[in-house]
Figure 1 (cartoon, rainbow, N blue to C red):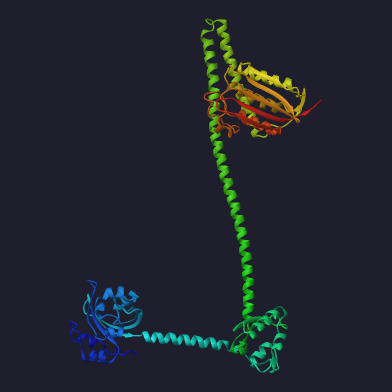
Figure 2 (spheres, rainbow, N blue to C red; figure 1 turned 45 degrees about the vertical axis):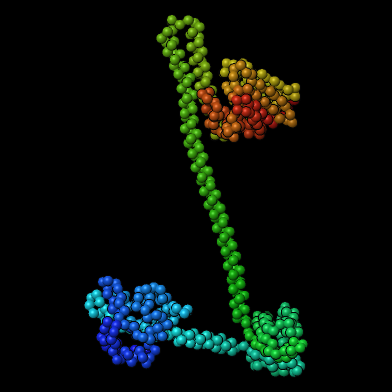
Length: 546
């Protein structure tokens, strides 16, 4: 097929130092459009020496012969596919005596050239091989092949469209339209003397208005090309596609003189489109359903993860609270037990030497320590009832003033400090329907805190009022107050204010107060400033019993 199909080993044997070439090579390079070259490849050094390049190299390849002699640089800067160009040096190629390469090169004038290279390889030693090759320019052939392929594609399209019917309308023949047999068959018309209104009769009513509008545009010269798809009146499942153009028109009025076009049966393609749209709708619906399902699953998973995080946080808080509770209870028990231990040791060793007053002081200290332990145990028992949901709302008729005075005396007796001012509004009934147990926990804890965290020289105010069916309880002190950062957590279990210093307590009281107020369906509010006292206002629904 190519001019250099002869045995090039002879040519290779006569190429010495790039200065001599055999008569056959001279004949080839001078008579035929084939460039020839020879080179030596030193495998160990990885170097290529171009020994000979024919004079017509630049004419054939459109590339510089001098550039080709810098073989690897030529591969890097000129050749588009470097790997294919250097493939003759691959191991599998070296095992053969011939290498065929097709590659593209960039030319200085711009553009590309398609080259075909036939190279004969001969091994001289383990490290030295020689190559003699011919290069043919296939650019023009490639262009011709591309043009031929385009022509073939066009012909194929024309052949595939051979199933379409043809129509031709010429002005002067009335409304008569020439149609070939295929067009008449597609439209279901048997009379060859067919007119425009005959075509309009086969159109389904839904497309009739569009078809008439298109015809008006055509005959008025508003459009040159037209294309319309419609289904048939007698068979709604069949679709036709009419397209064409105005071949000639009046130069003055621009009205068409001749119109030609084709009619195709697009039922299958239309059904495919309809089915594709149906499948797309189905797919979109399934995607939406699956997306909704995934979103629900994700929401459920996120909710479960959030719940797990909350549970872990609660567990962590509970463990911290337990640790804090053990520490605080241990401290609360250690101090009174130490007082009791010291008093009993003193009485045991110096009973006869102590005066009656000193003995009474020791016994009084033991008694207060016992009361402190007892009160702490009572708080712990109440907490256990709260956490076990054993504390219930059981209202009954209560003498509110007597009950509140009894609670006040109990708290003041424990603290050994009577400085509470008890004020009662005239609106407070003598008896109310209220839970005395919850009222005791609320008042005792709030009053105890007021006495504990305020100076002994300052009074504590307890005031009762009755409005709108609710008993209002105000407890005001002039003590250390509640810092702003502690107010949000004041009702949390085991929480103690940051300014309580070494005051006794285990952080249960305010938690119990809040719980008891909630059981009583009441409310509690705080008004406080750090270092400037605190006011608690409790509202408890309580009906009159008189």
